[in-house]
Amino acid sequence: MSDDAHNTVNAGLAEHLTRLWRYGLVLSGSRDAAEDLVQATCVRALERSQQFQEGTRLDRWLFSILNSIWKNELRSQKIRTGEGFVSAEDVLVGDGAAEVETNIFARQVLAEVQTLPEVQRVTVFLVYAEGLTYREAAETLDVPVGTIMSRLAAARAKLGQLNQDDATGKKETDRTK
Image (cartoon, rainbow, N blue to C red; front, side, top):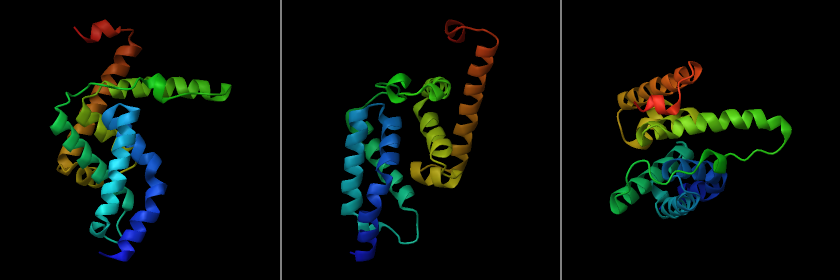
């Protein structure tokens, strides 16, 4: 075991806990499940720290571990896509008059993103919220780069249609027809 890799992983974990938790929340839709995913990710990262390659990005490696743990959870529990989402109001809590408008818009965006299928929602999160490149997102999710591009295009099209429907005054019930 490389002591340098272990020390890098051990020292870097605390720096990425918030981002890991956020990713866990996006995947699971549950605060408790997100905490469990982060804990399992930390344990696995420490156990397998010798696999971390010095000079690469620790956050990307940790995201990959968390994603792998989540996939294993899905397989073992046979969770259906779309169950157990946390409402936007629970996730985004605003305090202060200056933040109210921003929080309202953020809630609307988050609510619309949550309507996306899981694979699109996770891809949008990794690329737009976490700033991963298409290649990094593809490596994290273990899919081809073209799949990332396709998922983002589909997500943008769906979100654009939702915004267009809102602008033309269509109601939620009109969208489901």
